[in-house]
Image (cartoon, rainbow, N blue to C red):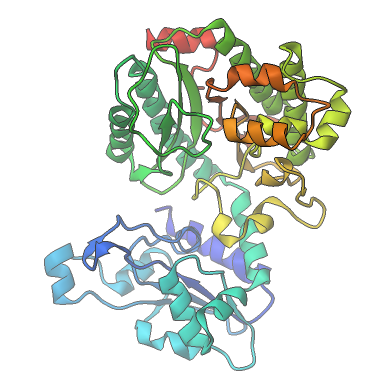
Length: 458
């Protein structure tokens, strides 16, 4: 938790950003794994954490803007709760710790649903909260979920996108753990080691230094599968291992890095060619990210570097601008260049990816690959985002494009098919936009050149 004054200041700013009515922020409850009482590790809703700071379940926050009053809603622990889960400060003591004066039982929540005034709530992403809102409003769950407050959503996105100095320190802390996780993964990237063993080691490190991994670890030789959570492989000489992993620190801020390591620490000439195109894309994209620049334009430039780099290797052909307009580079990178990062690894995407990454000025593209960019807005100081270009050889996608004659003017399919067993390479760093450019969120950059990665493995 931050100091009480941080939460008071945030709630005051929220009150000034929403014109009138009643604001409800629902905290999360416990979620069962396979039966009641056997629960997933509790994770509080990030917006509730941002404004209230309390990470215990079954709480709600009410802000009555018109009457300038706020309330913490919840129930005191029962004796049974204390026996099984331990004691906590009283609800009043927890409210005092974050500067909320009045507490009420959860049964009083319905009293704050106004008949005529606006009732602001965020789109629920957990079914428990969807049911609570539907009961409050006497609407079907899906109808209640779709009637969320756009005004509140935009106000929260605007605030949370700009990271304070306190938040950046938390993210640097999460980055330090992420750094350690990836160094361990590189050192363990040896022939005959199981993917599961490496994933287990680095996830254990995240737990030992924070709360958990910031998302399920992606670690696999089959890097052509973008979100590959299968860890059943045994590392083989000559192959590449993608490790996309990060940590969540004790105050729930996330890190998110990717490195692609040659098994045994020796990249082949073919692997080096592709790796260096991705590395150039990463470094040039970081250089371009500065205030006033749209991340959408940085994404498009990443496609330019990838297309021209592959053209030098004979895999692509033709005019660059025409190829970019046709979306040819998306065969090799079907995903976006990056996303916002903060209390969520894909920050605030539960509020709606379009609200977070786009606005009235910058609209999402519809072309394959381009439309997968999660964050395209004009960059501002305080934004924190990932930069994660990649080149992948996805056999099914290559076969589809060749069969349907998609972008045949720009793709040398006979050459591309020589890479069907290549896998994929992705590299990712976290940056924060500053007044005159950007910097890494963390103090020390992970090894990223071929020479430095090989040195770590050896």
